[in-house]
Image (cartoon, rainbow, N blue to C red; front, side, top):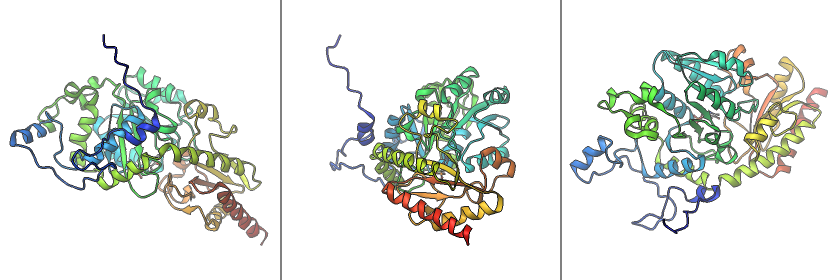
Length: 438
Ligand SMILES: *Cc1c(COP(=O)(O)O)cnc(C)c1O
């Protein structure tokens, strides 16, 4: 037996800064270089042949892999506790590519009804064109999930922190349900980030991010990432296990084991769909990851103070922040997100119908520091009125199922001085009361 000490397991903050990278051997560059290249010279024709057969790991073309992107992938995989990662061009692409890798026509997915508006449209409209049936179910109605699962169900799908009511997905319970049916659990962890919650620790199979949000963190790059726990037995899934005609009958699960799903997603789905991330954006995402814990601590701390301020305001009907004891999922938030349930939440203005819709618009117009735009997870504070923007494509029924009303305003709390942010909200409320009196 060796008497050497076990290798040290580095903490989250250390991996955030170092995982996946050593200083460049040729130049000594300490920061991760941007390999702004489309393609890579092969050492020899034999080596090239091995690369194309996936018998050798190496770079061929940046649509498939890139050294800057590889550092980002390794780093985020380390932070999520995943076996590997695949970075792609957007969060929407991460969803599409991961599900396309798994699904065939006729397959079914059961998904939470509390999802990002764009995800609902992708699942219900685009996947329907591919003859995949997606059933949306209230994440609080567990019995309805059990009823919705059929022999054709190939995946369960949810968001750690649901959009836009801040509902918390009961990860452990749904992982149990997925396990009982031998199907993978897909979790979009965008709003939580691996700093606040690591769904794989609760049994999730595949974790997805819109890296556009808190991971990049600065509102300057669109990207997404797919992470595999490596814990799922895909041998029953022909899409991953059967010989693949589009890769000279390679059996991805047999050949690559725990990397089979991601290898197939990279070597086939991204190859064919083409939604790759640019090296420059991977570099920006790395810049974001290096300060993730610090930013998330501040985002959450400020969000808590603003949620408390709003919950005590006389012009506010409700505040849907799972960090408040009044939120129905407060206990779930304490279990899965003990450091705090993120910094994106919504609240409702008092009033009804057309009047409150107008108030919502006026409130947003009156804000100075909060930017009115369709994004979350920026260092800057953001505000939006979901019913007229992000969720506009949904039918009234789908809107109600998502819990979006005309009085709802969604905030993404940034890193500005908290007193300045409260000042800004305060003066917007004053503008509303002036217009009511006028
Ligand atoms: C933004 C977002 C997406 C889509 O990501 P893009 O990077 O904009 O394509 C998916 N899910 C959630 C929860 C999001 O917030």
